[in-house]
Image 1 (tube, rainbow, N blue to C red):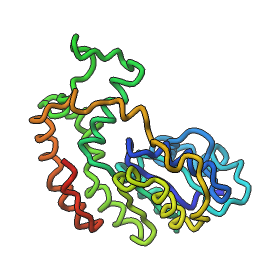
Image 2 (cartoon, one colour):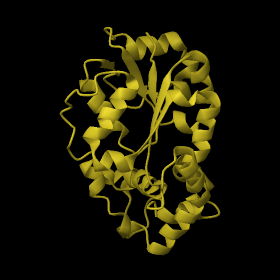
Image 3 (cartoon, rainbow, N blue to C red):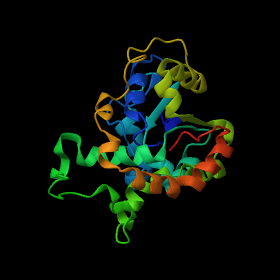
Length: 247
């Protein structure tokens, strides 16, 4: 059995928390591991048969079958493959302030468990402002580009019917994650009143320890906001939400 829903991004928007929640729901099947499959990006050459066997062989009749892959949202070839190979699939996305999303992506590499030995005092690792350096285009593509949500969403809407795409905001999840889960389950067509053990709990306690103000000064934060300004304005129209608080 192949999936009938995919959560396609964005990274650093509580996708791992959502994956853990859906593992509890008796009407939902998602692979036990990993929480980012990324088949249509990195393993497509292995074929759909391999994909089905590797990730869905334990399916036992749950009506909602899905997987989580944050790379799909940003990679048009993956979206084209999904549209071709999984007709009728539903897509879900969670979006957050792109400046915050960039910081958390950077912090995941540089602050979590001392990954890559980053030491801001000694200049070891990638400085957070390197993404806007004239030789920092590789970091820009890696960390800044995923936050151009309107551009990515436009590609999604070109390839999939809008009624099959659920776009949610991390703001709503953070404000009331139980209500967020209720709406998410309604979109999947499964029991929205299921009581999740993680509902009402802090989504990502580690992220709360990463202080954005320590690493991003106000001037650089303002510059990042300008980088995203036109895309955010376009996204506001696409999702019919006021995003002026994304500063």
